[in-house]
Length: 350
Image 1 (cartoon, helix red, strand yellow):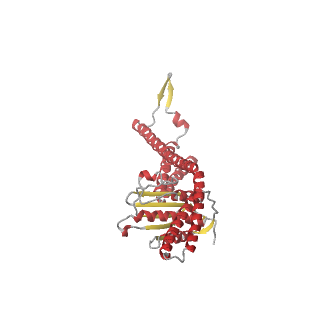
Image 2: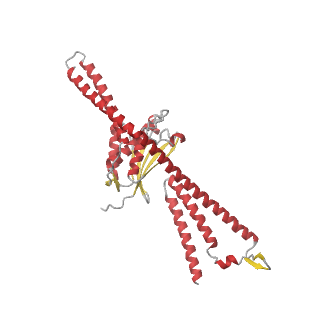
Image 3: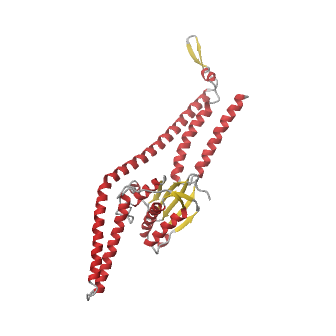
């Protein structure tokens, strides 16, 4: 009775565990994590089935397959030959499934880690020189701004005053644009210090949208806030990261001839482990070759309407500082979707 009850509990426990894993895999909304989880389940399932195949046998049952007679070992077959062949085939199949799943999962994790190390080394190699360069150029442009102001003051009584003012205004605007671009580059290169505090998620999204509309006042962003929960974040840096994703998405759809198909959206929702901020566009998409390099610092594909520059590298750095992950899915001609995955914050209570 004890043996029967124990075997029943073990078998039931394994079956319930497998069922829960399958339910969990089905509930995962992102394909990337779903595929990784399926590999893990395949490995666990193969081990579990092998266990179920043998756990009901004791050592005597296994060793009694062989007996020693007249100096020769004989096989005392309990099952039929086809049954033994079926067991061997099942063992081989499960071993192959488990090994392939484990190797594939390990390979993917290794490639991800190696990619991050490669990007970090490239960034460190150019960081010092770029910081010095940016600081020098910034000082020169600040000096130019002072000169422009002096010219504006000294030439107010001249005959061509309006025309001169127009030229000065144009040069000043260009100077401000260059300063803004260099400031963004410098902010990406220098060490970012984030201060994580409980922040309402809608505040972060609204801050990003406010800055986005300053750059694109006539563009619309579809917003779906499925949650209004608190997140542990640095509002300034995270808003800047989301803003970068939104501007990249808008640049991706600017070249579309069909304006009705040009859509940019931000969608926020919760899963069992993450609060997800999803930025999606219906633009030109990212090719497979470019997809491997878009997170590299200073990478830009001049053959497209997208200018990644330091934007995505900055976004990835900020998301990692929030103990999160940045993932994306893209298909050429059909658009891209970027996922900012932040760990659920459960320390806040109303």
